[in-house]
Picture (cartoon, helix red, strand yellow):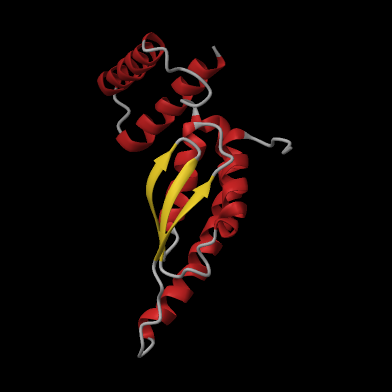
Length: 162
């Protein structure tokens, strides 16, 4: 029930923010579309924790500043490589194991890797990601452990590691 209430609140705020019209006709159409969306979500049996990302809003707000700093640091490295007279890159494909449990956490981790300049997630298979990187020395699987831990924590919540 909490997921349905959260979905109604999230969709309503999104609709109101995007619409900007508050006439009775448009408000009734907005309410109808929100209720239809929630009904279909419940009927498809996808109204669960993973389908309700607004419950993770604070975790993602903590994760984003860290990710932005990582993107800026990678931008500097890639810009230096582009501005050098000699191209000294050593592209490599590496398999990275993830500790993320949910599909949403895996997606956040894979997209975070792709957003970071110099790296691209090529494939995701169960708990492994195939990553293409410009530099072999910075593409070791250990280099992605912190991003994996932070993205898992942002989406799946704090977990104790064994």
